[in-house]
Image 1 (spheres, rainbow, N blue to C red):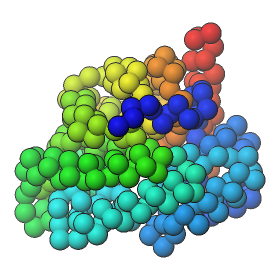
Image 2 (image 1 turned 45 degrees about the vertical axis):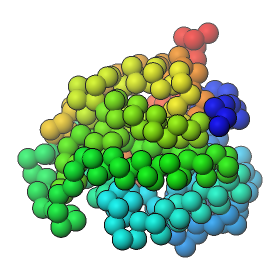
Image 3 (image 1 turned 180 degrees about the vertical axis):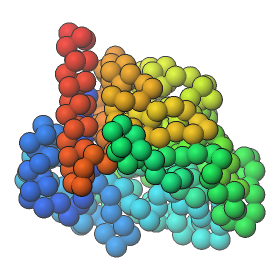
Length: 328
């Protein structure tokens, strides 16, 4: 097995990317370009999960000067059948493999995998700075009901991850596509009877990377999730960036902040959480990360969501410029 990192084929330099609809209008793409963003991450569903559609989006975005770095498929993301080994498990794994092969054929280098059976959990939205509406999670008010009729053990979740990633990794290598493993959100607790134990800590990520044993399997490092976990993650997010980044295992970064760790957090603006996000960007520059960092779960700043997106990307661009300047 070759252990040359697929990141070596990506142009050097830390990149800020936007999450964009695959059916973006000319005005949408113009806004992306005007924000100084040259890369995008897209998501679609099963109806469009084929090489022809992926290639058509790559060509459409390229005309506007935007390169598609990653393409996700909601139909094979946070899949309970895979995480819990349900009867349609094999069918969903084959669907994921087809997605990977289609991306490779279309020349798109990255996609994401999340090992959550019951998706991202939130409680009622709360207010952050100046009354902005934001996603929140409060352990005390979160539902205690089972989502899949019984409680599952950590060993089951690990076994199901192992069987999936050992099947998917060789396909990713053959297709030339990177799989970024997204952390559990929120991490480290059981929700709906399903423990979040694989991608919920530094040691969990380290073990998952070792199980995959592939240059094409690495991290979709969500800074927000890491901050949600706090000390329970085992290492700070900056230390994690240095460890995994130096090993060329960080493929994409979700760049967001929260007000405090579990058991109760509210997502907030980049300059309003408990983490100094300039330290995160500097760490990415220190390890010569050349993937993309994207804004994620942006609080609502006004009636038009593009306003908060532009604010966030502008802030990220400034942090990249500062990190590059300090690195000389």
